[in-house]
Image 1 (cartoon, rainbow, N blue to C red):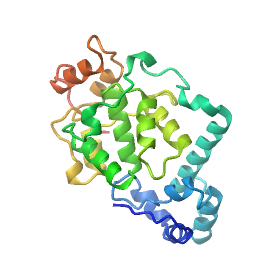
Image 2 (image 1 turned 120 degrees about the vertical axis):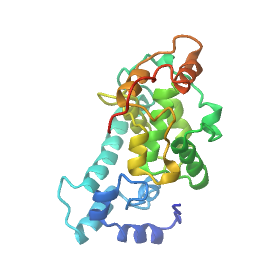
Image 3 (image 1 turned 180 degrees about the vertical axis):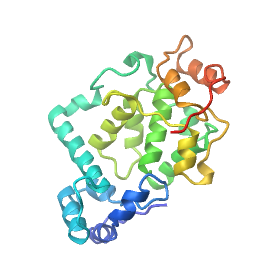
Length: 251
């Protein structure tokens, strides 16, 4: 579990330990060589320019390097926030469903880490225990809430922000919009195969709602509650009504 000492010395020590080659190869895995710099960037111990300069001085970075891309995304989100201001708290583009199709509360079973889906419950427990989540786990949690539980992306973003040590409004909220499809051209979906590929065994979630094909998950994400609200959709998925008969595909 990550620990972040709030000091300039700790920030610089973590910066000195960054291995961009290992980061590029393993960053998508929950146990990968992520930098752990985000809390220090959020709270001003380090700047994006300082990180790039320090790492590239030791390990020359190509413009297409994955670490450069990720620094670029953070800079881009700050740029969008500077220009859009409070607009980032609203959907930048229409989503898969109208805003009023989504509920404005995080379901109790998610808050209590008792959905029965290991990848989701462990993500929530890790968040509560450490104030930090690997980016992949954040995307899984966001996608599950928005597309399977029909929770409005802003509700989820505000909830997550309140628990993160590295909570950055621009990166957090615009990433949720990316997952929801209101800040990008398509939604972000994941399934149990994706979890098994990038997470250790305790996170694996076979025989759960996410153990489905991407086609089935996309169908659900685009399906408005027919009656009874978001719980109706969740019950249908849980009992296999929507996803039955559809095989899994690799992703």
